Length: 352
Image (cartoon, rainbow, N blue to C red):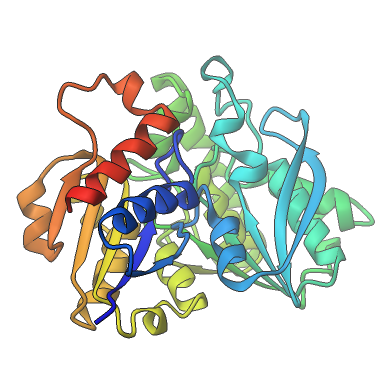
């Protein structure tokens, strides 16, 4: 019987897109099983590759526009439109990868460009907007995004003037469940990787708390403690507080949208993966979401990654195999070269 192999690997951040990783894995499978039916499913949990994953599965029109990056420099960004639905990837306008290491400073970076993308989608008539919140360079609680929307729509320069969003439904996608403030909030947990010093973290957290308190008094409700409020430096909070967005786990939202359960019909196995896998993979990250869907249909799942830790824990959770693609003696700077990563994914799949 011809075997059906589903390949759904997350991006290897800073190295390969989901599509590139999938293609390398497919080449490895077909080298050993040339008669196999290989189904490639680009995936993302809300960060890098979010728009690509939806486009590959559902199609649509790619909208190209000029927006401001996290340091208010003009750049070209893209989002997807399908019918009256827009799919926006925050990283396109406000992403960490848009900055050099020296430029990372969440006291200065802004989510203004994301607001420009939202405003553009609304002007085009989109009434259902899905936003992936991963990979941001900001910790501004979405204040920049709100300002961009006010600048686009408000006649008198206040949020209360914005009426264009009244008929728009927002859904945000993230694997983050952190609140906005406190030791588990956006500043303390995520700002260090965005360039924040210890003093900056204290300032950012205090700024977030002040903003949330003012917003709560204005609206009469408070979303700062809602799971996901701390996503993307507080963008999650801004969407939920100001746009009343629904927060969904990115992997579940994507897999539901692309009808992944139907794709699993008749599958012999699923290959998934990510840049680095350990016990935190089991805390809602994309490969674990795929594992849960496949287990429900008794389809075995193999996990590959550029780094593997806690292998036995991963196997005990249900992965049939958990394999590192890189030889133990390969230097990290060599491992992240795209051509090396592709070759090692292919070789790993030939062995598996």
